[in-house]
Image (tube, rainbow, N blue to C red; front, side, top):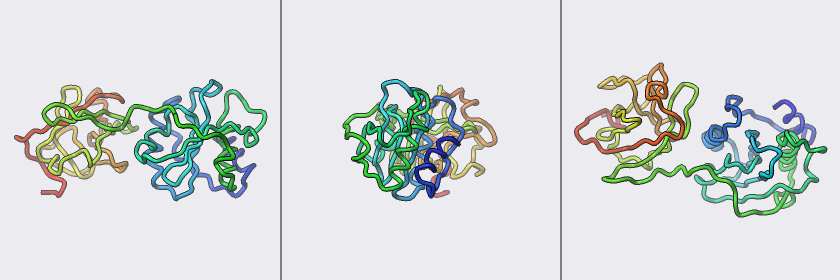
Length: 258
């Protein structure tokens, strides 16, 4: 990361560089995609995001610039930006192939330093995206974030990320949930039924279930356990299929606290 910052500052010494995270597991494109999805809206218009989770470096995978949500995203064509594009639904994709903006010689193993960082610096100095490459209409995508409707009103969803605390972040958002979901809905993971909902992690609910649901700061429904790993308790993994179903016989604390 230090050499990438050096490459940016060599082109634009006044650049303001912010690190989003250094905790992405090696080659974990899904974890990187989630962290970008959870953070990009916190940055101002015109921000340039550079991604360096790139297990395909040196191969035929394309380097991309994506204009989306009033910001720029520079990185490999491996799906890392696809969840942001899916959420925003309006974007422009450019294949970075104008070598004039690259650092030379270009290493076959470090495009972060030699392609992504210099291109980001060029954008920060006002270079137009059209100068950097050619407009393309396709890119690699990760699986969709959209839950699916199942039988009898059930919602088929999945765990899209597990954080370092063992919280399981699902692809369910408030828009997928009924107004009374906390009162009569349960989530099933590995045949384990989760019925308790909390507004925050330390809230005490009745019954005091070992595992509970909470709406997380990234806008997704999370499965959590107080001072413990929900993933460990449930033997859950990323990509795990989960089901949200009605459970009218159950009564719990609602979103309004009643």
